[in-house]
Length: 175
Image 1 (cartoon, rainbow, N blue to C red):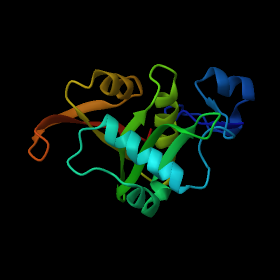
Image 2 (image 1 turned 90 degrees about the vertical axis):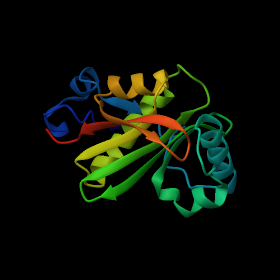
Image 3 (image 1 turned 120 degrees about the vertical axis):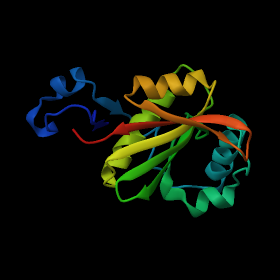
Image 4 (image 1 turned 135 degrees about the horizontal axis):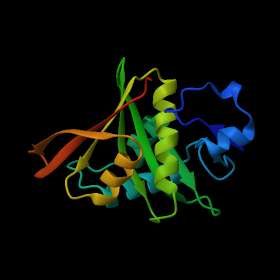
């Protein structure tokens, strides 16, 4: 078990007891069943299939693309080592990370929230001061999750490649 910080909490971790950290919204992540596994071709294929099935993309993902950028992906495995959720974190500029294609196989189990928290920690580790994502308008599940996690919608526009109207959501990672 490892503690993952809530980035909105102003007190440094070392000033808190374990109980205080848990009460203040720290996530206890079981890394035996979650992230930090070496990427396999099976994982990559499952990740590509999950992302393609849950997103309306112009260009579909394939396992070669996933493996080429394996360091960008945070994923969760079930007890049979199958992918149940994934998120991609891309360091796009010195101050900004893009959180892409948060996708989960089983809804309403907390997988998306766990992955988003891990993605924010990764963005913070990469030195980002802003986390950003685009969400297709009408995708209530995703927009609700990101808003609940402190993101705010900033602008909307038509993606001419897909025909979807999308909104940009951002969250500051600095206090």
